[in-house]
Length: 131
Image (cartoon, rainbow, N blue to C red; front, top):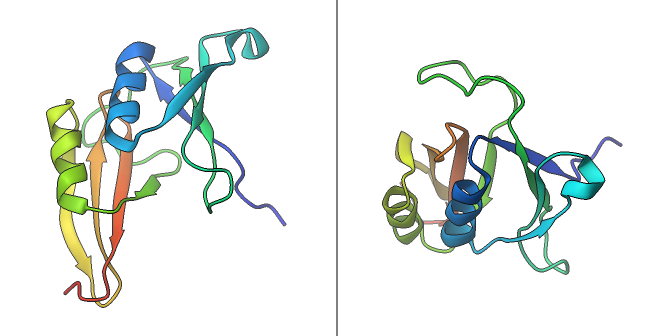
């Protein structure tokens, strides 16, 4: 099977992106630049004994996505414990709302944001009372 095992977020400003993802989601980073031959920071997204995957921030090799452009890749969604607190952190650290919070009835709250590098991502808070 082709199970997803790693992700890469392309960034223009590595330090800005590390600060954003580190402060919003609590990710930590390991410098893998020597291995990759370019600025490349491994992203540890959580406890290895819990579901989820790790990934990396890599130096963007072309033009940044333009506002309103169709998604050209995958949109990663992060599970969060408190949607509203996470959204406040995203906005405080320079992220922007791409699609406001909405209910997946009986399942969760979902929404999409643009990070400081122009990349789309989602947040998802399980809540059986969402409607």
